[in-house]
Image (cartoon, rainbow, N blue to C red):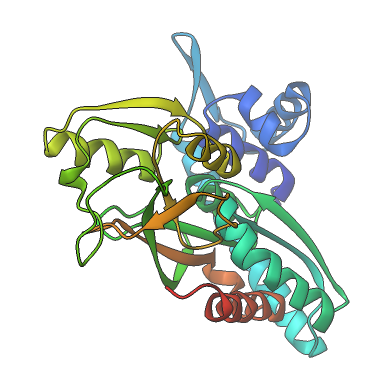
Length: 302
């Protein structure tokens, strides 16, 4: 019988593209990864990785074994779900992840409720981008994740991963109260924001929408700062350095003198709870999904 550990190691090497990256993912040394690949190849009695140029590439035999690894993981997940249901209680390890504002507004309240209602559940929380979360869920490193994408730009979810919608989150314009911009009955029109200095975030769905919208309207603009941390962006807005976009979900208190204005045709992001299909019947996963839905209902008005 093939060792599940060896199969998971091969899967990591194939998906990550190198022994070094696989070792980082598996939290072990590259030497340990190479040794496990060597033992697996001996058991298979045919090459599973071959040298091509400067890289090692998987063979057809490796593709067969990776499919087997995925099936083994699915069976493991199914067995865990059935065993936990036999107990009739919520317990065990549960790792959840989210992007920053989702962590603040949804995951933390959900985790608090889970700790209170299910003290035998051991929770681990991680802050990850939506793309990182989906990949971590697929690999089995995260059980439930909160992700987001735009209504017209979806983060692909496949490979045994299921996405359940939580709701829609609208983005507003944030600026100093004394920053003069035209405000119509439905809010600020982006077309009236020619010549502005923007405080942008690192590349991602917010930044992509903003820059594409400005360019499509042929507006002149300057990106005066690229800042990931929400608090730092708000500090720059409060200082009059520029204007920025801010989602309503998980919004922290605005600094004195800073206001949020609705945008005409504002970008709207979809917020999801993501998990592996085979884990859906686990009581811990069901409890986590229910807690996230409750957190959404109790969050700011969307």
